Structures are given as C-alpha cells and as structure tokens.
Amino acid sequence: MARSFMPAFRTQDELKALQLAGLKWSVDHAYNGSDFYRERLDAAGVKPDDIKTLDDLRRLPFVTAQDLQNGYPYPLRSVPFEDIVRIHASTGTTGKRKVLVYTSKDVDDWADMFARCYETAGLTRQDRVQICVGYGVWTAGVGFQNGCERFGAMALPLGPGNTEMHLQFLEDFQPTVICCTASMALLLAEEVEKHGLTEKINVKKVIMGAERASDALRNKVKDLFRAEHIFDIPGLTELYGPGTGLDCEHHTGIHYWADYYILEILDPETLEPVREGEVGEMVYTTLKKEGAPLIRYRSRDLTRLIPGQCPCGSPLPRHDRISGRSDDMFIIRAVNVYPSHIDEILSKEQGIGSEYQIHLDRGDDGKDYMTIRVERAAGAGPEGDLEIGKKIGVDLRKSLLVRGIIEVVDYGSLPRSGRKSQRVFDHRN
Image (cartoon, rainbow, N blue to C red):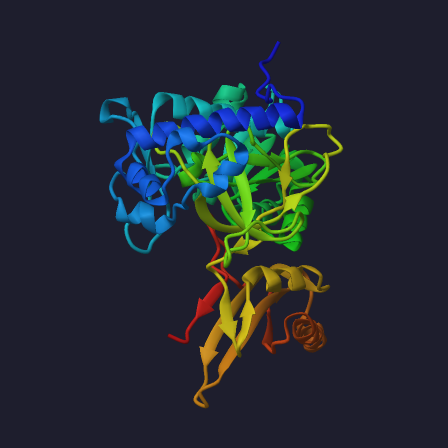
C-alpha cells in the first residue's frame, strides 16, 4: 500500500497543539543556534521560555528579506556547519541573493511536503511527471523532482527551455502531469496546438507556480492541453522552496501545510492581523526547520485566508491564490495600482488572449501615462480592436479610477517565456 503524506491531526485543537509545540521548539532552537536571532529576540525582550501560548507569536519581532541580504552568505543559520548538507538561493536580481541552508532533516521534510502536494492533486504512482522548471541553485527543479520521487511517481526532469525536446517527451513518454511556471505552460500548450500534437499527448494535470496566473491564462492552458485540472502551487526559497501547499481537485483554495508553518495574514502597513477573508501580507513562522528557521518572516506576498472547511474534508486550512506582492504596487496619476488589479479586469474581457503588458511612461508635459498592450483572441482579426479597446478602457476607469491607453496587438506577438513573464515596464525613471 502506498504511503500517505497527509497530516496526522484531524481537529483544529490537535493542530493548535502541534503548532504551539513547534513554535516553542523553533524559538528555542533559533535563540540558541543563531547570533542573529538571539540579538533580535533580546532586543525585543523575549526569551524562549516566554512562549506559553500561540498568542505569544505576536510578541516576536519580524524578519525581512533585507535581514537575509544583510546576513549574506549564511543568514539565519542556526546549526553548526557540519550539519549543513545543502544551500539554495533565491532568483532575485537586486542586491545580494537570499541564501538558505538545509540540514538532512530539512531536505527530508521538504520532500514529504512536496509529496503531499502530488497526493493532494490526486496523483498515483502510475503517473509520469514532466518537470519544466529551473534546476541549479534554485529550489524549483530539485524540489519538484525530490517530491515526485518521494511520492513514487516517474519524474522526467527536463527543466525549462528546449521546447523541441519538451514536445518530443510529451509525445514519446506520455507524461500525465506537467509542472512549470504559468508562462511555460502557455508556451508549451500553444506549441502543442501549433504542431498538431493535441491528440498524441496524454496530459491530465498541470501544476503551475512561481508567478500569478490569470483565469484567462489558466483556461487557455487547460483547453489547449485538454487537461482535467490546473493546480496552483505556492512556495518561496525562504520557506524550503515550492511545495508549501496546493489546491485540491475541488479548487476552492490552496490547502497549506499548517503542521510545518504558521501563516499570519497581516496588514502590510500596520502589521496587524486583517479580518478573516481580507487580503493581507503572508508572514511565515516555521515549526520544524533546522538550518534557517523563519520567525515572522515578511514574504511581501498578498492573499487572504478562506474560512470554513473544503468540500474534500481535509482539516488543512486554506488561503487564496497569491494576488501579488505588497512591493510590486506602482503609482499612476496618484492612484495606487497592483498588477493583479489589471489582471483581474482583463480576465473578464471577451475577445482577447491571456498575454498582456503594462507600460508606464512620462510625457513631455510631465504627466504619467499607462499603456496596456493586450493580444486579441486567437484567430480574431483587427476589425474588433477599437471596440475591445474602448470596453477595456471603460472597465479600467470604473474599477481603478485611472485612464489607460489600450493597444490591441496580434495573437502571439507578445513574448512567451519558459520562466516568469515580465508584465510591468516602468520607463519613467
């Protein structure tokens, strides 16, 4: 009988008991193993023995990405070097990379967490998983592969790029699952259609992560692959990597692994908890992580908690898909805009594809202008561009109280990527 990777707890009281024990252990482990954490906790006037209840979490100081960069090359390290078996680094391009260290137990725990993702998606050991994400020092490729092998399915570790090889493997090896970024999923799906391979492949499920995917893009990928399910997989390098949760086949929210970490949803300005169901910043505290534990780590990712229990009956709590980041907001004509706001508007429009770009410029008159380039739907001609542009412009003004220039371009003319797609181009600076 195949091993299950689902949690042992069944009730919320059992979960809270697990979380409290994990919180006490993590604070004690970090305090005694890390100079950074000892100094930070001492400055906050908190000792490990002060943690008596889960409410004491709010007494702990926050950790930020800047702290990780300041502590380079081994930030948050809480174990001796001889206990470290691996490092991973973030994909960030500004400043020093965020580097995290892993013990053998961390690697094992991460593999179990990731295997739980595959189990949540309804995979079996008969599935074949084509892994189309980056390998190397990044957490993506090795995370997807180790989790797949721990679960017991067949891994096809191709990585991104080399579209021709991906198409060959889709036809020859008949993978049933594809793991990739949303951009890579769209690229592959369009190439499958272009090469007439739709009837020759056997993709049933697509697991996408690393970037926000609009409903339009998700539906496009699902239709082109003729897939049964599209799953969202969150994760960040600081929190092991990808595989920190997944939506089940009911798609009512992302189940997150609350037995491995505590997730707070806080107002990014006040750092106070938001009301249930409201959007806020995801703040993480790990419960088992040895090498580089997180205590109230501000991820800058935005989402909301989903109340109630999922129809699948799982006791695991849920959060919504990540809607954006608290630091990717831009200001246009004194209006605060998140790219996810525009994404939501475009997802509801008819006659356009899933790809778009946002360009911000400053005119000779000193005023800021926003141009949104969208692709018309596949097979559509330019005769409807004017009406489409007017409709998007009206919806933009109604929803965001800001004007934009709408440019409708040919389907397929905006660049596709095997990694993350750039959406916002700010030319004002």
